[in-house]
Length: 376
Image (cartoon, rainbow, N blue to C red; front, side, top):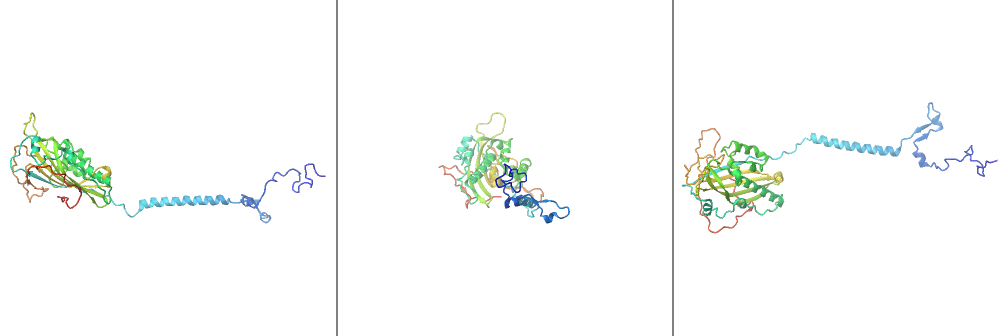
């Protein structure tokens, strides 16, 4: 007789106790069996000596994913190792950056034919060719900047602005003119030219490379004091130098009113004019443009009135009101002297008459056929 808990057809075949099969809801399909981590050995396999009842099966999905991740890690490590190896063992060295060349300079003193005329600064300016020249930095007018093949308009503007800053610092700064400092000029130079500049300031010599007056305008403070007003006029031109640099050429005339450096009350009409013409060429690469610095390539300076025999390598030594040049010839040069050579150049100061009408602005702009040739 069947138990009350058994179905009408009798107890289940595999349930000897007659209880409900707790695994009845599970379906052991083929995918479930394949995914099992344990597998029972067959009867034949279990007959072997020391045979176990079951064996472990490797997880296929896990194993496949692990192998892919491991392969990826190995590839990344190999790529990183190759990059490090090539960085340290690459047979070709990176090209070295171009170093700035030393400044080449020529200084020509201009000796007057007679005595230097005296007067007041205003009267002297009014009767000179500098009568209509702008005052100070207003006379250094950059041209209209236009882009070039390899430089944008803003980069050209930056180059012209840096050159103007150099001209203002080296020709108009009162502390530089009086010999009190050189820092405003030095701060604008390419680091490769620092050693040459410092030697020119501390040990000036007229050898074409180490005269302080090739870098800046500086008067002997024991002899002359410049007036605050300086008349300036000139041009700026620019052009590409290859694909990595701009060249700017400047040609400016600076006219100074000087008084003798004496203690006490100075004579009312004891001023005199001193004229300096500076033709400079500058080179600015992309790093210079970014940092606001430059390389001075060449410097050609004419300055007077002063004696040709005077040593002007360290500072200008002007002839002041009423004085005459000892001789208009340059200092003597001994070809048998094996020491450092001197430039031995000199000119005669010729002052043209002041213009009656005010001329138009001088032509400026990109370097072209009208650009003065580099003097040195």
